Length: 461
Ligand SMILES: Cc1cc2nc3c(=O)[nH]c(=O)nc-3n(C[C@H](O)[C@H](O)[C@H](O)COP(=O)(O)OP(=O)(O)OC[C@H]3O[C@@H](n4cnc5c(N)ncnc54)[C@H](O)[C@@H]3O)c2cc1C
Image (cartoon, rainbow, N blue to C red; front, side, top):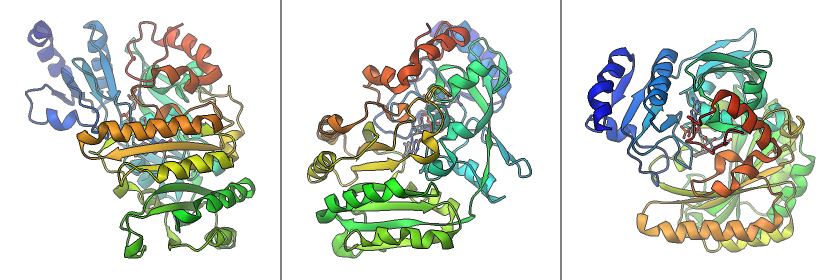
């Protein structure tokens, strides 16, 4: 590396529009931090690209100098592949520009943008596309793994709304992938993670949403959790695609609408969004208030962008995080018993177990229509282990792993690639499911030497 520094880095800097950061630079320490504080990697170089040409230069530089290469979008991925030790990181966080064509209902957005950037640009025109539930997440990593959120039951996965992508390939070429241009690459990008190149620009279809939507939280005590979960299961089975209801089991945070005596106590939270006319949604959500006696409620008509940011304060960067996840096609009573048992022994006040409801439009495409294969998933469960003190690492990761095993007999077998942690290499094939072989063939065509290996990796066929 020392010889490389002496001979090449000045050359890289000379051609680069963005910043080239080395460990001696003042901003390097901040630049190597990502959402999950468990990740503590020290790249030799971090390049903050500002143009597609910068990305091309950095890809060529990494390849020609045999450097380990990582790509950072929003820096949220739990596995921490946005950073690497010793190699080079292409950091796209400065590339966030978005432009909306309201007539065509399309948004074009750069590869380092966050969900907040996308929502802000689209909602200025009363439009949106389905993305995740935490606005600081990167659009790139989310989309490349599939992407789902409050609008997915109505409008599908994020990838189901992707029209095209501008990609810098391992050869340093800039290509456009769409249904008609490099269709094999376009297929692979829609669920194949960061394996196929650096996406510098995404183009999404948009839909009329809000700008005000009926959304919010209904909170029940944990003592009624089994009955709430059973009623939730029946409710979701007949809910229209416009309505998304997720459940979260955790200790109650000190939210102003919850009585003080509830703070820190076990609760089950129903989080909901109705994507249509709020007036039509009101009667539909009424049964959710009758699953027992709620300890609090905060439901109303509010800006869609506000709801998209509602969970941000609970999901700030800098905490230690360890996740475990399963997909479910049905929820059964044995699973509910296991969940309640593990909520009873939460190792930290920030840990939680949630069920995101998919179904609806996410299940209609065939499993081979895009790389994302899990069209049978009605629910995605994620065990969020989250805590502050490194001394708690073993206890908290142990809790998450134990619950993961206890819930495995009830799961469908699939897993969402974007929820895999760094130690789940044995689940990568499961995450890509029946599409793995085809993905490996596309990988051989676009990245035969596996330059893009810092991801849930697909080996070239
Ligand atoms: C708090 C929180 C909430 C979440 N909620 C949801 C949710 O509701 N729905 C959902 O679907 N997911 C959700 N996720 C998961 C999220 O989709 C993944 O963590 C995703 O990988 C984050 O993307 P990123 O760009 O922020 O991450 P990064 O860590 O920057 O990137 C992840 C990987 O994607 C690749 N990559 C990143 N940018 C590019 C690029 N421009 N071109 C090519 N490859 C690239 C790289 O391989 C990188 O390692 C959530 C994550 C967190 C932390």
